[in-house]
Image (tube, rainbow, N blue to C red; front, top):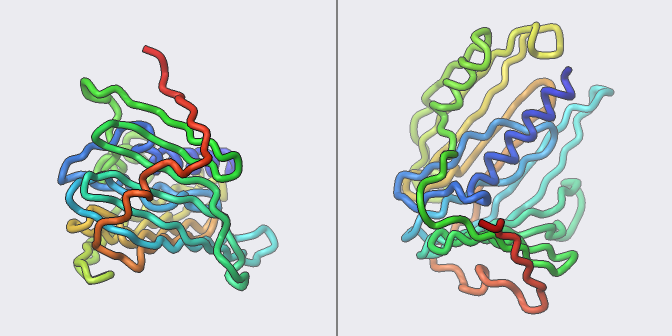
Length: 260
């Protein structure tokens, strides 16, 4: 039961991070990242909102502390680069996880580029030198929307009235020279649904920058799986190089846009 629950959580996490990849991003000034629902061991990274007029480059530091069956804790870290230009185009990496004691940069596994004007998603695979592209329909409105924290709480209540959700306002702080507002959400899962035989409290903490339209810090803690942290650092507010949003030379482009 625990494995099934955690698999479902991992699926939700991947779906939230890929909401933009599937074409559900909106280039509006009030676009916010979806809440992070948690994963079994690893995080997927940070959700870069495709908001025009707010260029940036940054390094996203990810740390995962997994609770192992023997009672020890396995720690893994990685660093992904992100960027957004004046048009709202976004660049987001995924790299391998490493032991904190290891030297060198983590291996680049994939890159996602999204253009909110053309609705074109590009997925780069450095191992195969293949660029998969998917163009989303430009007319109408998608029925799916990016989930807000309020939606997440409502969904928890609808999915099971026994799950208790509380939210705490953590006030304002400054991170990377921008103001951020903190919120901590706690979900108490009753013993009969936790898979452990006892109540479990899962906490998610978000520090959101309205100026950058970005979660600068996300913390997730679940006593069944461990702790994960995503921290945005080394923020540069200059316009990124246009080459970051282009397909590198030597890549084979594969159009995967569904036929109408």
